[in-house]
Amino acid sequence: MRTKFLPFSKPSITEYDITAVNDVLRSGWITSGPKNIEFEQKFCEYVGCPGAVTISSATAGMHLVLKALGIGPGDEVITPSLTWVSTVNIILLSGAIPVFVDVDRDTLMVTSNHIKQALTENTKLIIPVHFAGASAEIDTIQGLADDHKIPLVWDTAHAVGTEYKGNHVGQTGTSIFSFHPIKNMTTGEGGMVCSDNPALLDQIRLLKFHGLGVDAYDRKSQGRKPQAQVLEPGYKYNLTDISAVLGIKQLEQLDRFNQKRTELASRYLDKLSDIDEILPLSIPSYQMKHSWHLFIVRINNKSGFKRDEFMQKLKEKNIGTGIHFLPVHQQKYYVESMRTQQIELPNTEWNGDRLCSLPLFPAMTEDDVDDVIETIKEVLR
Image (cartoon, rainbow, N blue to C red; front, side):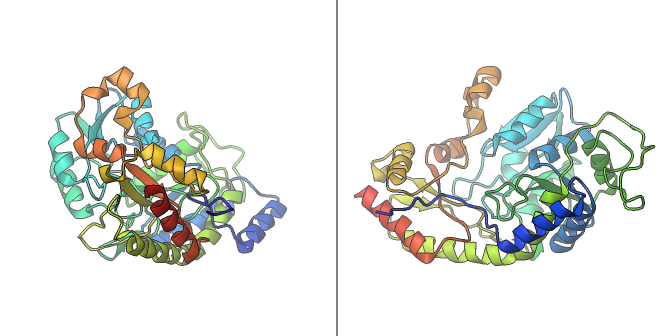
């Protein structure tokens, strides 16, 4: 048994990152400033998108996008139940109605067919999810949205570095990225809204900093203009330069981080191939490049274990795990307030009872993967 605990995730912070953050701390400008502007520019260059806005979290980005799109009472917003609850919370807090759809049983991706079945005359927005580092099938979902003239906002929180048919996700349309510490790159807390809609980005810039007509940092005045006027009530969702410079340095290392994740995931897939009780997710058959944000398996009935019992036994042997995710429609608040227990999402529910994320982060070694595999075999025995 391992003597040192192996967490399921750990941020990859290097001395390179620490030095850059120290430089900003010494600069005298640590809130939103020139590093935010540089981060937006470099992220656009990496993804290939025409414009981007930094925000304090992906959740904040979702709030601002829904506000900018005018989503409100009576509007229906389609999204999978198998997602992080913040998306659905924001839909509800906007006064809109979350409409849950199922996902593919083996990839956990929402598909155009799932979405099509949920469309009504009140559907005002679709929020698909790129799951675990793989890409959803963008063409078919985008085509459906275009046919019905419904806006799309892509949840790309898991997908920094992911590609679909040779292009980075987020290159077109509107996407929201997360830089939480467990993500493939981090700013501590933070996110980015990318869009090819300049008017939408302008509105997000306005809303993210009190509704002022300029950002906290103005390129020409090297600070906020003292005569800045409130154009409409806004929020306080700006990213600090401390976080932004960390994002810049992490972005420079992202491809290396993702390559290591890919190598570790490949080793997992090889080692798990003869363990019938453990079912890794399937990789979508269409052309895409996986960034391996998470390595998710399902604990099937052959194991003799419930998922939570399996995770506890791994923890007792110093192997950390996670759950991504408990379906939102089965969460206590949504069951009690929206009576979502009446919703039938068979693939979501089957997976929701069995999902388990195994350790995956760039600082891991092949020996760490082997330890996880041997511990799984020991637990199953």
